Length: 268
Image 1 (spheres, one colour):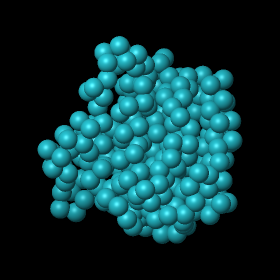
Image 2 (cartoon, one colour):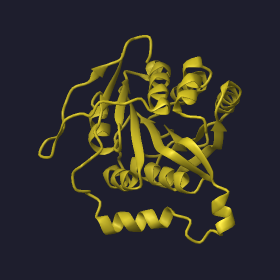
Image 3 (cartoon, rainbow, N blue to C red):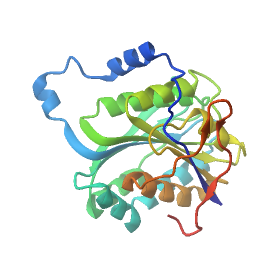
């Protein structure tokens, strides 16, 4: 069973102090890069970082289910359609694996995907990707910080920037993800979540309150790793095509409204 919870772009005051957010943003901007190097940055419709959980709670079989699900999604004609619907410039996509606050790896470097041929090539790269990280805690904040840095210095300039983070647990070490979430939103980056509920049936609420943010942000859930393939397919179609997503009500005292919107069993 899949569900989606949509989050409006946060209009409340940042929990991360504005001065600190500006300092973090400045750290990721290539101010010292030569003008010629900056001119070589390629404009794309979307920069998309796929951030896959490789922490101790993720078994070898569960990790393979994540990778196979992503590989299968990029072979799906509906994902190719979504890439074309996003614009004519293509999607720059990369894969990172993450666990504790010292372990993040760029498993597949930034790749331009704009048609069926390049989508199939990226699918094969996903299928061939080994697990670089085994074990470690769940440091979602550190994963977001790494992803922000990658988005800000990857050689592409996206009309939209998205971090697609999936996992089955709450952060248990490192910086609290809410601070990095707010900094990402300040930089114009949207964070979407895929919460896998096999370890913690309420982890989607945690993602909704502490991880996702930005324009049209949403949380999708999968009851277990077996359901991940359908969940990631539906999620990729939504975030690549940039389809309008209804804003959820937000109460400053209580946080996001509760409840979910259902997804048909056949996908998007």
